Length: 258
Image (cartoon, rainbow, N blue to C red; front, top):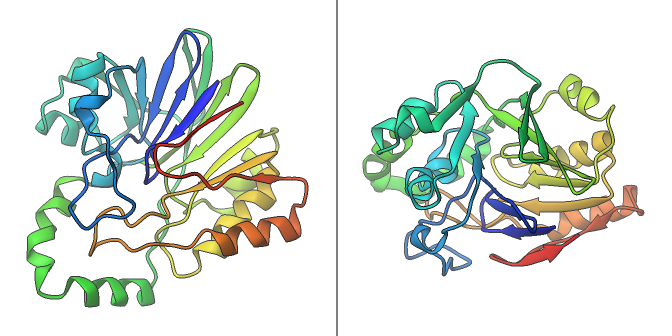
């Protein structure tokens, strides 16, 4: 199995026979760092596309990618309409209606769990508005066009390994405790959306006790809306409290094998 990080919370999971895309987002403005050299037209493989929530940095490119690959999209309620407005056919979209819904994607097991988006704190909002300043009106349509919808986390079993993907870090303690009752091999945890995101993300590691931790969404994907988050303090904290866990900080478009 190969796992590729595309920046933000976007991943590709590829086996000899199947390819799954999660929150695949490639479009950037010219100030984004690190640079994303790939365009949606470069992605021609994908059997299914899994979505965590409906913000633009998670679904903006999904209609194009679904058209390129023929992949069906699985997402939470309230997201399908945004995809349809941007060119997708309703028949290509499956909205998850119940927590814990199971899917079999040609031997890859997937389960969708209801989750929550991280709540932006006041200090983060203040800093973001200060960066955006007079450009706020320019970006409001982009934000309004892509509502959050029902947030999902995804658990996949691929070649005997359990991967859990979170597109945002708003999970409650009860949610994490329930998910932590089952073993997790690879945790994909986002570092974006809160001034205390390092401590918040660390709770995911404590609850799920994964063997491998891959932080993501730390990139400055769409300035001035976004900013860079240094993943090293998170990695150091995990090393202190979970010394047996392997931390992998990937470069954009880097592929690792398991």
